[in-house]
Image 1: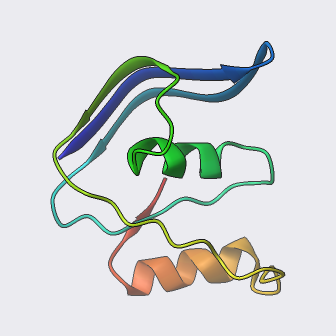
Image 2: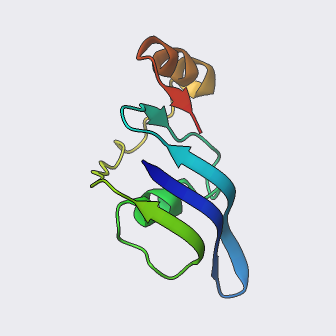
Length: 93
């Protein structure tokens, strides 16, 4: 299980990521979807261990693998992405 609670990350006085509470359970399949600049990459860098300058509680009992998405892959749109995630039995965060 991975737990993030009261996470706050800022850079040059600007909040990059705030998370009140998020639990990732064993076996979860999740997708992180959001607009550009909403903190998706920052979250992935945090949970994969590539970012450690934050405040809050981060408990991680697993190794994560983060694969960057292919460039210019925006043709599908959010509705299609949500449908694909649902078919895989996952949830979006």
